[in-house]
Each structure stands twice: as structure tokens, then as C-alpha cells.
Length: 116
Image (cartoon, rainbow, N blue to C red):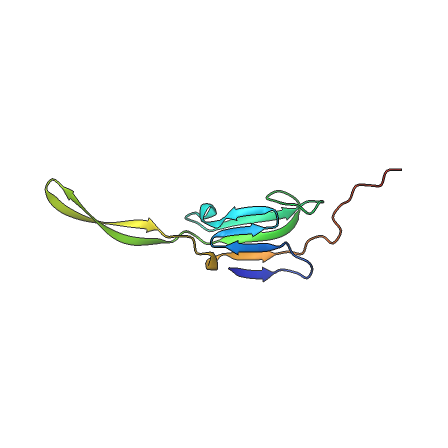
């Protein structure tokens, strides 16, 4: 995984386990998110420091490259004759091709106002 620190400051904690990215409180299956075109996931932080896919303050951007395919030959018997076809088979997720851009988290998450 390519890690880019976009600015100075404390970033969201992350861990990569095969093709599963654990980013703060989020669990993201990169293989499931991968499509035939590049996919960009924006992750935000709320006032309590929780991460989500909606919000105003960026915490991270995940750039997932397009799914790769490999050509494989398949031989079938059709009408008594063997016919060989070439088919495209999706390849497993390659986490090393994913880019994770990390943004600094706000220094002071919102706290409830003191009641008087």
C-alpha cells in the first residue's frame, strides 16, 4: 500500500490485513470495493473523532486501482468437438497498488458544553 501524508499532524490509525483495510473504526474490504474503473473513497471525521464516509473534515482518501484481468483458455466439448475459448478472469485484489492519503485529524474533537 502506498501511504501519503498530506499534511502535518496526527493521522487516523490504520492497519492492512491482506486486502482488508482497518482505518480507525472502519473496516474496508478493498477487494469488494474494487471495480473495473478506479475507485476513490473519501473518509471523513466527525466532531467526536469517529470516521465515516460522510462529513466535512477529511481524514483519508483511498484510491483503489481498476480490477485486473488475466486471459485463460477454457476447453469445452460442444457437439462432439473440443472448442477452446479465451476468457478474462478477474484477479485477486493487490493491496500494494492501493494508495492511502492521510490527512491530519482535528486537534480538539468537539466536546459537549459544560452544563452550569
